[in-house]
Image (cartoon, rainbow, N blue to C red; front, side, top):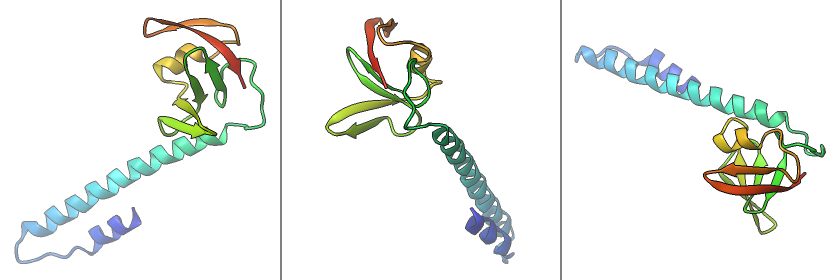
Length: 124
């Protein structure tokens, strides 16, 4: 981000007139995009920092590993899927449609998602 700002500041006027303004505007857009990406990454980092890996969960919440009759999920933020010891886990954010359904459920709870009946088998 700093490189984009420095490049924008160093862009000098040329005999082409508009070239300076166009180059500066392009570098400002690049800097703004980098700032948005950095902000999103910082939000994700703050969310991940809230997870205590040693905590056992009695209800589905941020940091829970949820096993249902049809899938395994980790309630967090990150890539869409994660493979651990040969098991595939979906990364479900608490604000996603499925996350909103799962949050607060206990082991043994039934829930319907996408017209499919599921059961929470285990929460850890």
